[in-house]
Length: 141
Image (cartoon, rainbow, N blue to C red; front, side):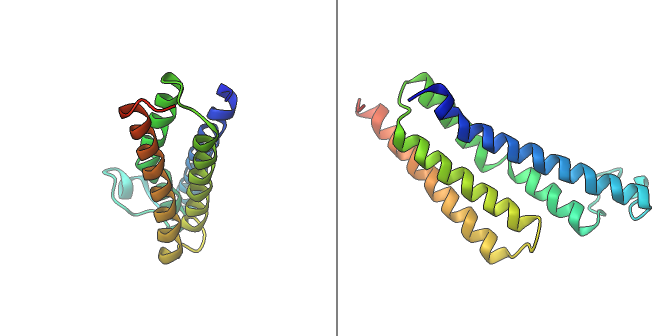
């Protein structure tokens, strides 16, 4: 398995994070320019942003929760040389569900659908960690 193949899903996750950051910046900047939000209203992190800006901000913040475990695992499988086709396939599934979750978060914000996408992604990440832990602890691969 090449390093590029292993890192591509991680790069996609990073791209998602930056895309959400840019969306957040755009909608926050637009709200400030239109006068919809005033600087004193948000100076102490008060949640007085319009809905779209808030959706992007929360989705952006979510990228520093569960995906952190994905980043760590990707680094560990590279260092320990345990990256294989199963890891890459599961990594793409995880990232796909992160993208789907973010897409719902910044559009309809359907909590049930967003939660389902989150749950599937989280379950995939748990499986990835379990496979890695078993491989390391029992000297497999």
